[in-house]
Structures are given as C-alpha cells and as structure tokens.
Image 1: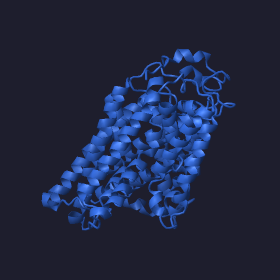
Image 2 (image 1 turned 120 degrees about the horizontal axis):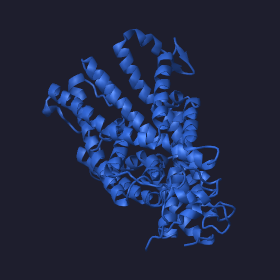
Image 3 (image 1 turned 90 degrees about the vertical axis):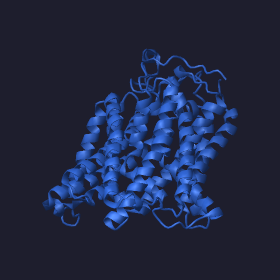
Image 4 (image 1 turned 30 degrees about the horizontal axis):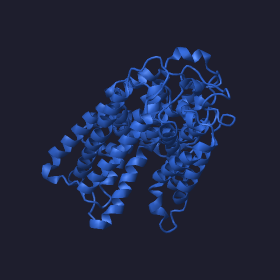
Length: 487
C-alpha cells in the first residue's frame, strides 16, 4: 500500500496547537544521520558493563556453545526486525516516539505510554550511573589506596552510599548532564566515539589474556553443559527471550533516534551492522575474555572492570576502567536520558522542553537512591520488572496501529491538533482501544513476574514481553474498528 506522509519540516509547526508542540517535538527540518551513526548508537547500547555481563551469562546457562550462538542469532534477528518496524513511522514523519504514539493512543492519550517509558528510563538511568561510578571507584582506590576507607558505607556513608560512592556518582551525574545539555549533535559525536573505543580495549584485553594463557585455554562453555537434545529447547528459548528483553527498552523508543536518519535504507543498514553483526562479535569477545580469566586468575570473572583491575599495570587499569565507564555513560544517555527527555516534554510541551525533561529525569534518578534498588533484588523485581512488563503491550499497540490499522499512513499535521475533526482525537483526545489493549496486555504479562513461586509461572515470566506484545497487538487490532479511524 502506498504511504502518504506530508513533508516533515519544522516551519509547518507554526500552525500547530501550542499545547501539543515545541521545537523539540515538532517534525525535523533536516535528517542527517547516516548508517554509521545508527551503528554507533547500537554499539553504545551493547558495549557496556551490563551488556558484557548479559552476553557472558548466556554462555553459562548449561548449553553447548553452538546452541548459545544459535539462540543469539535468532534473538538478535528478532530485535533487528522489530527495530526496523518501529523505526519507520518516526523516520518518515521526523517526530519522536511519544508524538508517534498520538496516532495510536490519541493526541492526549499518548501521555500514557510516554510516562510509562519515562519512569522506566529514570530508574534504569540511576542504576546505570551507579554501576558506572562503581568502576570509577575501583580506579580511584587502585591509584590512591588511602581512599579505601571512604568507600566503606558504615564509616563514611549517607542514605546507603559511601562518601567515595557519592563523589563518583555525582561526578558522572554531572558529566552526563553536560553532554546531554549540549544537544543531540554533541550526543551523536559522543556515541560515535564510545562504541568503537570499547572494541579497542576489548581486543587489547583479550590479546593480553591470550598471551598469558595461550590459545589452547579458550573454552566457549563458561559452565558445564547440562542440557542436550529436547531438554535444551526450553533453555534456548529462554536465552532468545532474554536477548529480546535486554533490548526492549531502547527498541520501544528507537523512533527517538531513527527520526534523525536520512532514510529507512540507512536505518536498516545501520541496524544490520549494529545489531546482528556487532552483537555477535561483541558476545564472542566477551566469552573468550571471560573464559581466559579462569586459567590466568584462577576464577571466572564476568565483570570487565574487575578483570581489568587484575592487570599488573596502572596505565592499563586506568585506561580499561575509564573506557568501560565512558561506554556505560554512552548507553545511559542514549537509552535512559533522551527517552524521558522527550517523554516528559510531551506531557507539557510549553512548560517542559527537551532539556528540562532530561533534567527532571536526572534529578529523579538521584531521589530514588538507585544503589539501594540495585542492592535489593526483591525491590528490583517488584519495581523495574513490573514496569518493564508494560513495554511489550506498548510496542504491540504501536505496531498494530501503524501497520495493521492504518496501513502505514500517518497524517503529521493531525498529530499536533486538538481539533475534533483531527484523525487522532478519538474520544476527548484518548483512544479507548489502545488503552484497553495496553491494560489487558500489561496485566496478563505482569502476573507471571509477580507469581514466580507458582508452578509454571517462573518459566512464563521469561516471556512477559512477548505475552504483553502479542496481546497488545491482537486486542488493539480487534478493537480499533469500534472507534473512528481515518485512513
């Protein structure tokens, strides 16, 4: 079906409802990002301490290495396809994720997915900042052993974080805020550097360990192979679901970045190189590096910062730890800073600009004391994962609306009007079909997460994103016809 999309130019925003637009939410005047910028975005998303640990954990599930690699290929292939789908409306209309959501949820109802995604990002922003600051503390104590006593919470602590921890956290908090405040062009240059820089350190670290242990010490199975034949299928499916879940956050609001791309061809090529190709290469580097820590250090180390800290060279320790710190800052900015900036700005466009939205998220990340969340798995389970169960339905609703309900048609001007004659006004600015689909999908998806002790629920919890996404898509598609949909 032929797509009909009005030109995305900022000049046309002059006639838009001021309660729905500002300079950051309006369609872009120019879209300059090319293939490399998309590749660098995904590198920044993958190349972090969290990405390192996640990739390494897949090789310790009790599967043979070839089974893990197959699960990785399938999982990242699913992510690649879904990212291409969610990228299209934002790239072609030149608007961010919360504005595109107005098509499905209504011009006012779009605040529902925006707030949900924004709150999830705030929580993860705080946790990622805390993890990155922990790497800085490792370097500080290694270089200046006298600081070690200030890293003890019981002696020098406040609200559950040590004095040195507060220093590292606030330093990185300020650095990230400065990068963000300079605008999207500065962020683009920052992430263009972060991802490749980690590869340099990863190859150097891997080469160092190979020189110490020899090629014969490499074993891609980080744990004993416990599953084979039919018994391995559920574990492989769980690994596939884990890969998709890991990318579910940035995948949902990928439109915040695809809107800057010159064309969908550039987006697809960037996604291909940044996801399947890059993720598989990074995963292989991770498992080789982790496997070599056993013969070299006598124990399996899955934290890259701790691996670097074992090297008997101060320069190497500083360079490695700082690189992984910068990489974690990169993923934090792209995945957890930019998203709430647009999301919160969408709620009150005239009062909250993009920068103000981002700073609200930054302040919120301190108020939730993320180090306490991270140190309490029970709290993480009942906060972040419960909120995360909403991501699937939101994704399903957006895809169903754009591709199945509207046949890939979007009227850009109507995204910025509160007129009852607009395509996306529905009922007082809210689309009941999308809201019901989100609630149904989220409720069903969150039940297994909250009831993991019930037989069978723990397994189902692994697929909460798929459950929510599928239900959100089906329910929205079935209910959309009951409400006015102009095509």
